[in-house]
Length: 131
Image 1: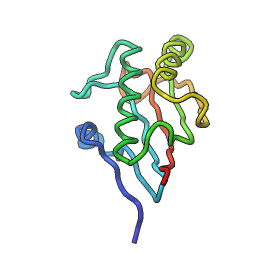
Image 2: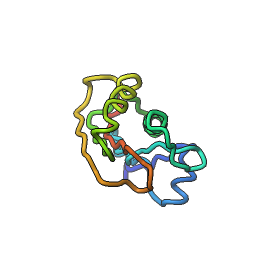
Image 3: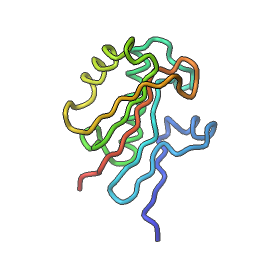
Image 4: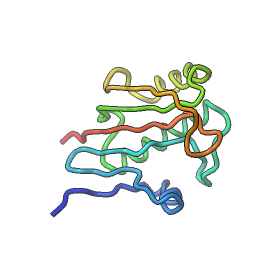
């Protein structure tokens, strides 16, 4: 018997149907979250950087909650940034507003592009559910 469970929040069912991936997979108490980006409910890329970053964090929050976790449960995070030097100050400001500081390992990687034009960040993480 496998303890592997696919986690799909209701808000992300359209992207799962379109792209065919799991937003997260839970194995035991560990939740492996796929990278989350800032899009509208209609899957349109949000153009304003600050609003896009807020949306990416909210999408990540919904994936974590669907998997029984919260931001405080994140142990490892990787963020992928397009034009990192241009947008990092705003990204960090949004992150510091919504995500607990200093509770997880965090790696930032600059990339030339993400899955769709206009995306500026993708946030991927691993969380361990507390009992």
